Length: 98
Picture 1 (cartoon, one colour):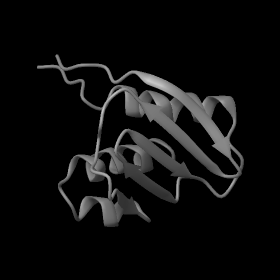
Picture 2 (cartoon, rainbow, N blue to C red):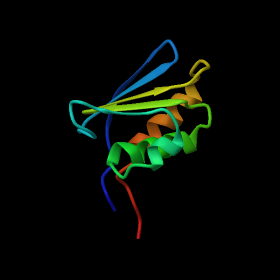
Picture 3 (cartoon, rainbow, N blue to C red):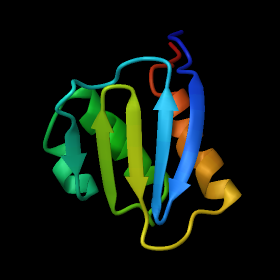
């Protein structure tokens, strides 16, 4: 059940992957997380998404969610597999099965 979030596009700028989606995930101010523990300390949708991103890729060291954009930073370069993994985590964020 739930809906898949459409990924409108991805762009890598230096060590940051920017994921543009078809729906708003946070407000215009945005939410920033510098680690999984910081994300776990909150119960917002952006925090929950950040936890999933941190858990999916241990190389991720920062997540910022603003409106319909998710920015994910790693200290090393992004390869195709890492981009696909992060995009999948975002895309499947609202999906659940009973």
